[in-house]
Length: 451
Image 1 (cartoon, rainbow, N blue to C red):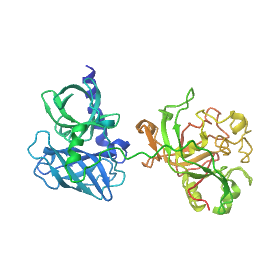
Image 2: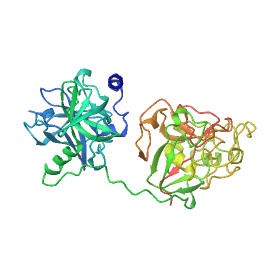
Image 3: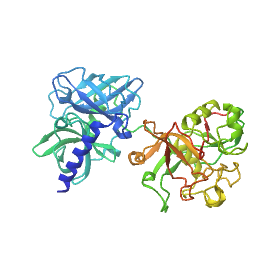
Image 4: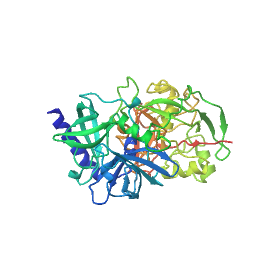
């Protein structure tokens, strides 16, 4: 009964995916391709290596039988284009044969779909996900919850059966390849383990193909803030934020977390950057843009009534850009896992202490990295488009995330003078239309290089 329910869920997921924009895919899906050979139903392939201007794909040999140049659609391609491929090798006539394909100039965003560590073989009873483009669903992308029911010789037997269109596709455990589908037998699907695919890749060419995750760079050392410098273009002080890792999202023990803050997930900021020590002041905005749109007037007050579009223009004119949502939270936390970097009243202006107005920057305590007003005073725009379920699709270690899948609203962070202190938390996510402004929204910029 549990597996029947899983099957129904998988069919619903596939029907939903048929309507989805191709660019809106989790990272692991960026290593999946749809293969269409002449005279055959669609099949599936796995990206196993990326070379300059080229992607290598492995699939089941019968998926491309009789066509030297099968057509490829990359799951990661937002334009849903069709690419021509070249078959580099094909084990013709073998029941469990493989084929190796090459595609020139693949779209940006394509990634290697990595195998299980040490190519470990799933045991009987293991829950897996079977991925493909089944003919029964008109070739729509499908993620089918399944289970390994037995291991017979080299074969993995999968329930439910993998219909036409899944062949050549992966069976996944936690987003990594545990095997490849090649057919079915009665009510069961049949797959070979990832280790067998790897053996083929190691022997198919004179130079063995190394199928693995991109070699991870060592985790950065514990972060500590760098020096401060003045940006001559806007006259503001910027603080160097070093690279590092942190847990993004709902803070441990935070009972005020909202669903869009979950799940907490590990994020790596791979490059250091300079972040404004304060929110952009009215003096700085006037200097760069030649105007001051603020409701509350004062040289040292944060500028407000700026739309995302206005904020983006300002940061670019000042020689930088808006921070990503991940960069903003990383800097706000400053090495802490707590929901705030200090007592709410001591670090920020909220509706409990603001008196109904914004206040001069640097009039509350800074966080441990010397950044002021990361919580309270005015909201701060960031680069990302808002997706309330964005965190749910992130990998175990998310490197430099930046949601640029177009939506209706952009993210803003930090809370403002008019909001409850419960909102002024480092993990809280808010949203607003990018073309609108209000007297509670300002900005803070990032510079990647500061002379």
